[in-house]
Length: 242
Ligand SMILES: O=C(O)c1cc(C(=O)O)c2c(n1)C(=O)C(=O)c1cc(C(=O)O)[nH]c1-2
Image (tube, rainbow, N blue to C red; front, side):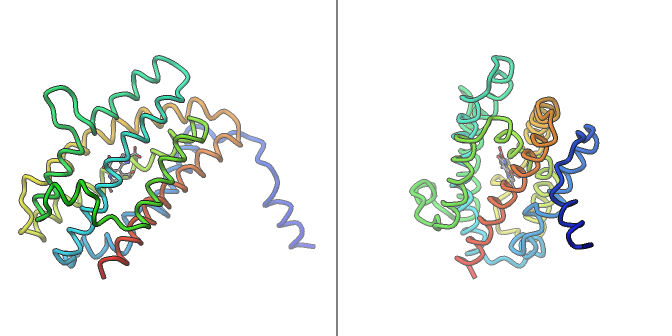
């Protein structure tokens, strides 16, 4: 009887909207439980215990994520319903691909590759990219192409959590991996300003446009999905570089 009652409760549709604060709290909880800062590969990285091979493997594989992010954002852009929204979103593509006279994030990532001892060519040829990374990243791009735009926007909200991780990574690389040329860290520096402004825009859209309990839940689920994308990449990298 009790079990049955529990079952009924668990499956009861939520009737009330979360307030903006409650909703934001739910989204932040996803990061607290599932963001990739807690992945064992990052833990070992932060202890300074990754080998040169492992760092190189991570950089070469993460290139596939970096080059796919603007493609993902172009997919979202194509589904955004208003001119104002598209004007806000388009800068994300340029952050990665570069503006006239500016290199952009993908170029900065290639310089990180050089700083850890990889040639640009081997990174661009994707010769080290393992299947699990490819599948995870492709799933993210596919999600952005095929899901309602607001869910795709919600899936980008891992950027609420990335600045803490990236600022820690900058310190760790400087202090514990002195063999990495400092000039390679520019990419991470620029994310420290880009990510908070990206996530402000995305969070405002999600809070404004998810106006039913179901829509709010779908946004939380989209963010969980994205955490899985990031986690699965590190699982695959960890396995490839033991
Ligand atoms: O290094 C990281 O841990 C990390 C995490 C994330 C993230 O949380 O999604 C992004 C990035 N980096 C990043 O560099 C980046 O450009 C980026 C774009 C996005 C996105 O979903 O639109 N996430 C991230």
